[in-house]
Length: 443
Image 1 (cartoon, helix red, strand yellow):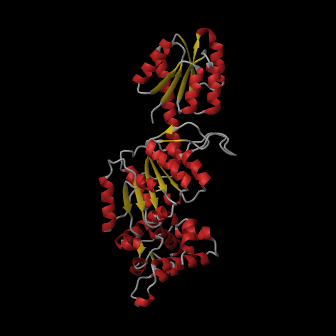
Image 2 (cartoon, helix red, strand yellow; image 1 turned 90 degrees about the vertical axis):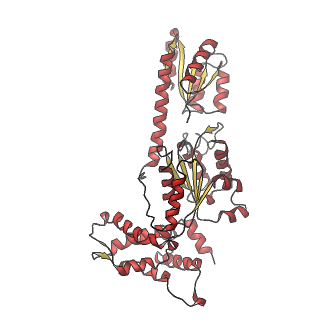
Image 3 (tube, helix red, strand yellow; image 1 turned 90 degrees about the horizontal axis):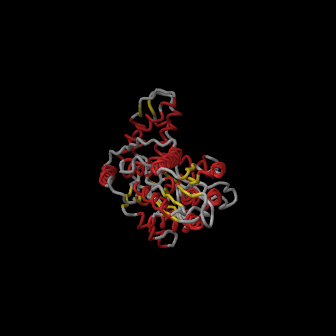
């Protein structure tokens, strides 16, 4: 993101020199000759730094500082003062100015002060992004023995130098979020932030605040200005999981970010400019949602520059055994057990199961088996007995159930197991409450 500077200085020659030297340093610089013009610019645009003369027509530098601290507290302020006005400069520092310089000043001195503030601002942004990263393993890897997953990885390898938005589709639990991370960490943006949010887990108001941030006083409880994920992800990637669940109003705001690279915080009046790559994902049929007016067609095509469908685990059975072994190694250390692997019978059990919850369900099954198993290898007795409902076997044509019907049967049994607790059932199944509700609703 460019470091945007606004200079308010009524001495024409000083203003001219400041604008010229700071532009040469690579900053985005705007110059005005009085305090009122500066305030107007601040209300209409977003600036990282204000350099203001303490004595100007319209508004003084101190009065302008008061306005900045009230309306845009994230903006740094440097006050320019005459030698005889040191007292006013001290007052400005008490009110929140970052620095002050006295006239006549050396341009190199000003450049050093601006560079220090720019570096500090960059560290703050990186620190916010780092906190949002917390717990995320950047060394992502994926188990992909099947031909279908190998082809997907080849596609991702082929677009590693692209800046295009990507749209992942596929059932819940197939690995869309993992592939999104692989796309980012193999791209040219890999050293920049990768942030993610599930659009199905928050109300419209909370999702708006999380995505776009809010200004102080925008709503009850907004006691301070907050940056949203779109702003924090600047120069990086933002992964929007379950994008089809996003409310229409937020879809319009997101479209503006993609098309114009700018947005407004909730309650804000100043546009904020960003450069973000978007990766979206859904387990829904987006075209159906477009046809019934629940998803914007123009947003779909903006996000869907490259669509990648991830097949369900039942359609890539070559991945089941290596995935099960991987999850066993992953969870074994915290089990305090010495388990070497799976018996042939247990692995056959897994290989002939349809996995309605896909990879996420497989991991839950393996973790559960580790807790229950008392011997040196995982046996069928440690696997959920409800899996027998989904064993793939030869059936009479008239008795074959659809996968949707089998999904619903299985979900009902899990729900019954947890006494009707939908939150717990959804957690164990590895799906959202919205997806659970949708499965139960289907006839």
